[in-house]
Image (cartoon, rainbow, N blue to C red; front, top):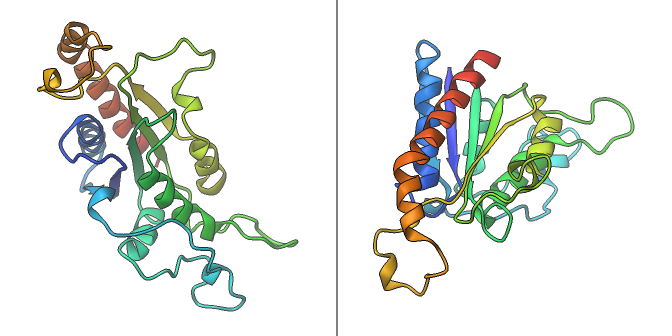
Length: 218
């Protein structure tokens, strides 16, 4: 089985990356011969959908596939054919990063068919997915859960790949060790330090359990 974690955050060893690594470990613990890999999007050179419509050409061998020739062209098809995938992102201005948004545009658009008859969704298979968010601010008391309101992408993921994504958010995270260097005294750093020791391990465990759950779904 192939399990992937797509890191939409700019750092490869901080909160979002650690949560995704925990997800991968959970997936690996739940199955035999699980191949796991994390991809850091900020290390790749690509852009969002360019509306070239190459994925919509009638009778083309590339119908339903992104054809734009850059660093994620092959990766998109690998993700679509995996057995489980988690998408991770810090929350910027109430949404996922631009890198992850651009990646998801390229992933989902080729599998939506604009025709009157036949299937409107042409993804190669059903795919269990998860969205794992990290955010600096405390989680607001929003009815229905803040995590579900960060982005519309989980809804589109369910429509295209057939499974309702697992969604979690790790809030009030520890951002940096040298916080005194920056003008950021709005935050309660003593509280954040305590939560880093008490809450973040629980967040990692939750991500681990999501990994296990997605393997069971598959």
